[in-house]
Length: 79
Image (tube, rainbow, N blue to C red; front, side, top):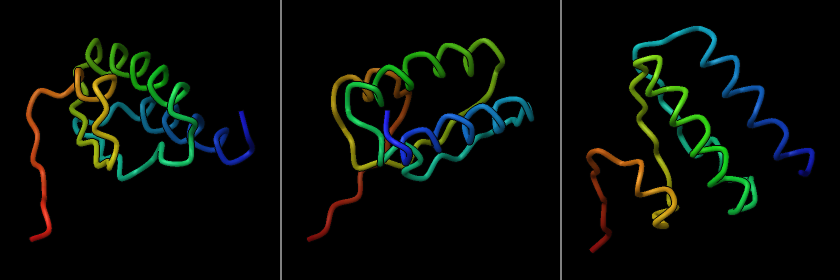
C-alpha cells in the first residue's frame, strides 16, 4: 500500500463513522491499486449496507468487481 493509497482508508472510515444517509465518493479510490480497490469496495459495501448508508460512487472503473455492487447506474458518454 503506497502513501497515496493509505489516504483513502482514513477518508472512508471517517465518513462512515459520521453515519451519513448518503455518501458521495468522487473517484475516492482512483489512486488505489485495482486489486486493493476491489477489496476495499467489497468490505465497505457490506458495512454501508448493514448501516443503511446510501453510496453514490463516481468512478471511471466499470470493472465487474466494482459493478456487482451497483444497484443503479448512469453512464455518461462523449459523442
